[in-house]
Length: 101
Image (cartoon, rainbow, N blue to C red; front, side, top):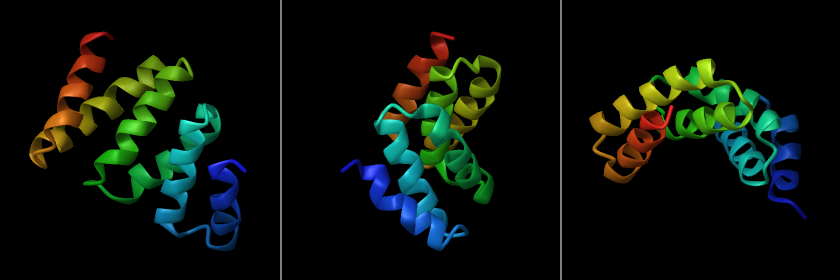
């Protein structure tokens, strides 16, 4: 069973639960279903200004989906959050991704 199959019924039962949405988006991303992950990760990024991880995954998913123009500002915001929240490894990864754009 795919991980996303565990979270899909939870999201369907409680569509406003942001943690279920994030878990589903993350599972879809990890399974390579980046297009399907995007709306769930976007919803999470929109829900909280300080939630870094959905933005990182959203930016990566947008890149993989060929949406460079949409990905760049999301990744830039994620980098600013990583710096502000003292997340060294994510900040380094985001700098690397942005340098390649």
